[in-house]
Image (cartoon, rainbow, N blue to C red):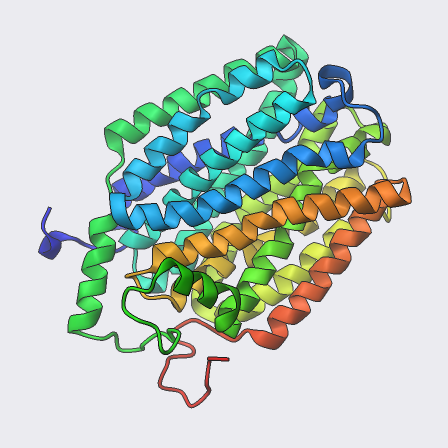
Length: 436
């Protein structure tokens, strides 16, 4: 297909968008299979000592650290070898994970398997997101991100519930083995047969921007070369541009919530008397609301902008986390999980959309990869923080308060340093400056 024949838009590329949505749902299945069964049965099935909050959090730390690095690497690789190859390698890496969980003699094997899962997620989820942004229009970015994250986190929620039932029917290890291998093998086949590489779309968009600048030019960072080095992109995302710094720190802190839901919420609920399937549904409520609401919140930001959905999402999510420890019972915990999930739905697609708004197509993949580096490093930092808080206090409740307070503070930083990034609502020709 030549450059002149490339078309942009969700409807114009419905086939490839659909294939990528299936891919991200399978990526969600891969991580979701470890969400309920592994932490809830860490003591009985994998020999972890009761009350070892830091050791329990260790598999999330490993996942976050590895995924963060792979997000960054995936962005750079995808601009050199293409999106499809990176996606394919991500699924190849996932092949040993179900077998490692099935044969795990102790908790260290779970940590190692989760580190491989971090490689898989860093390569695959990054590529499903970048690929869809390549082939859709600027005014569809919020909807595009909403669709992507809806599909992925519905996959996470479904896998958590399905594997809880599979563990009760077949045993934890066998249930995870069968489910996990089916997911990985299906994803590999679909990637090889149906997924197209979208790098040509990104290159064509970059060339088109040079030939005819858009009517509402985005507020791109100033003083940046057309093809910045890896170090330059990292500096821009991390500290040089105050807007990108604010977005990156918010992404990092919001992952504290997901680390909490993954590592400690199932254990907390089990100690309060919830059954494994009840835990699956409560954790699943968080995932379903998060995923389902993004169909609305992503599209909403295309109309009202990214700023307020992101800021309010941080604060709403913090409220939901605090609610968990302020009441009891399956209904209360489900409502609390739903509030946290809705907060995540407000911020999650729109932080990424904000990065895409103000980074040029020539290095957008690297920018998104760097944002995702900081965001998923939040798994590791958050898991360490909540593990320390719970260990020092001797109670899991302290971890929930730690995360809630961090979300309120980070939302305040985002409110203070960020601005509206939607090019239609805040184009570059307005007098307000954007740089530090």
